[in-house]
Length: 154
Image (cartoon, rainbow, N blue to C red):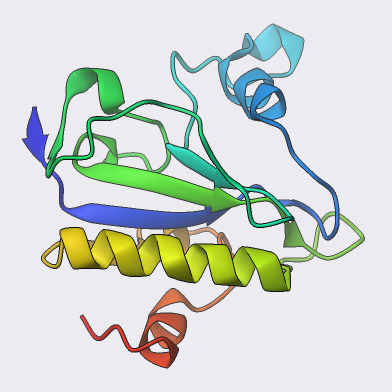
């Protein structure tokens, strides 16, 4: 068990407007490499924000300030044992390659509620984009600028 240090925001790197299911995420992350997956033991995200703003729990956790071994997801190499990860469906333009902030109005609202509630409960946990921890475009928007725009200054 480790102290929770980060909430990492992600995108699924899928084209704008394309819904993603929990089964999609599980298949992409946990299927064997030979079957087109990543071969991980666990998915990369604790929660998924769907196009309609619904938040779906992918990996149970006990909502405390610690990351228990059974709560660890594979969202950012080197940070997983001290992080929770939330992703929104999307993050790429219609071409499926170009990074773009494709959050729907409902996703933006859901993500704001999620992050505000998380920050209220865990004010010392740093909220970051995946791209702040790794050389990635994910989540395809500037998390720190967005946080300031919703009144969260870390």
